[in-house]
Image 1: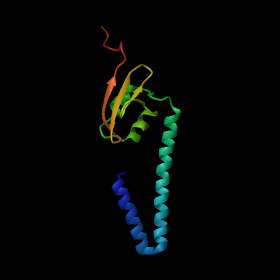
Image 2 (image 1 turned 30 degrees about the vertical axis):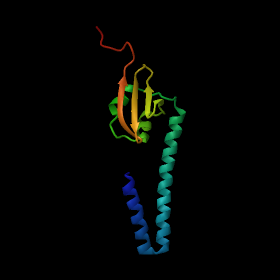
Image 3 (image 1 turned 180 degrees about the horizontal axis):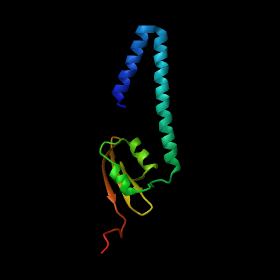
Length: 128
């Protein structure tokens, strides 16, 4: 969800709760907002726990990952796709490798995917 839209909805809930039910409505709206934030935090923690349990920098198929990437993806979406944390290569550059030796190198800028490259393992090529 867009951060501005979420903040707008939260403010609207607070105003509507206060206008229709007074201080009890504001408390109820605040409870709903805190619950939503806790759900988001729980989702993020489950994702990071799953990614932390997987071998670092591993992915099932680098070619499949390469086909699913698009510019502007958030880091959380990238970790969801890969199922693991990437190996840090340089500042804002991470690498995921599959069992066949193929790899995908991604560059993040401001927490979003800016560019990526598929690196084929040596020896992969068209058969003569």
